Length: 311
Image 1: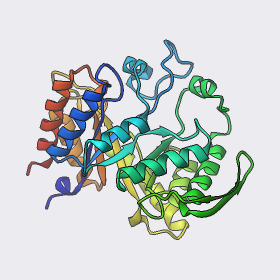
Image 2: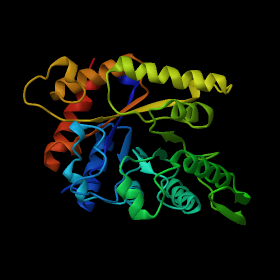
Image 3: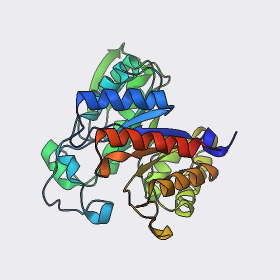
Image 4: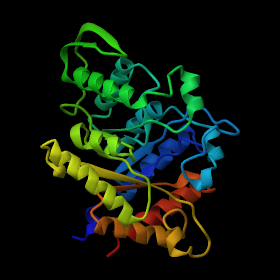
C-alpha cells in the first residue's frame, strides 16, 4: 500500500458562497462519501467587512468575497451528519472563543452524539478583530481564553459532577448527563503557527490544523510539535496533522515556487502525493475559494481523489 493510499483525504463542504444551500451540502456530502473521501469540513465566519482592518492570511491579503454568505459551521455539520453515514465531520476552523465554553461544550457534545462519534473539533483563534467586536469578546488575551475554554471542554466531557472556577468563566456545580460518543471526548486539533501554539498542541491536544505551505516548512513545524509532546512525556504517535489546501486553480502550470498557493489540478495532486510521502496524516481540499459551480466542484473532487489514489 502506497503512502498516498494511506493518507486520509477530505473535502470542505460548500458552506460559503452561492452553493451554501441545503441541496449543496447534501450533494457534496453524499458524493464525497461515495467517492471514498474520509472527511467533510466546515469553516467559521460571522462577518465579511468590505475592508477588514487586518489583511486576510492568504490570497495576497484579500478576503474571499464568498465569505459574505456563510452558514453556521456546526449546524451545517449536523445537517451533513444526517445525510451521510461514514465520513468524519470536522471544523477548519471553528472559532471556539465566540461563545461561552459551556455552550460550546453542549453543542459539540450533541453533534458528536448525533453523528455517532464522527466529530473532529478543529479550533482556531481567527484573524479579524471586527468579528470579536461583533460577538462581544475581547481581541486581546485570546490564548488565555482558549486555555480556559479547553479546561471547560475537558471537564464537561468527563461527565458526572462538574464545576469550573476560572479567571474568565465560572460554571456552578452541575451534573452532566450528556456524553460524547467518543471517549474521553472528540479529538481536538488546533490551527497554530507560533511556539506557544505548538506547545499547546504537544502538551494537551490531539493534533494540528495547518494550511498548505512548502512541505519542508510544514514538516519543520511538525517537528516542533513532536518535540513539545516529548517534553510533556506524551507519545507523538498519538498526534495527527490534518492539512488544509485551498485550491486556487490556474489554466496553465504555475511556477513550482507558487505551488501550493496556486496551480493546476495536476499540480495539486502532485502536492498531495508528496505530502503523503512526507508523512502527512490527512489532507483536505477546499474547492470553494476558486470560482466554480457545484457541478464543477463535484467533478474536480472526483478527479482529485482519483489522481491522489492512483498508483
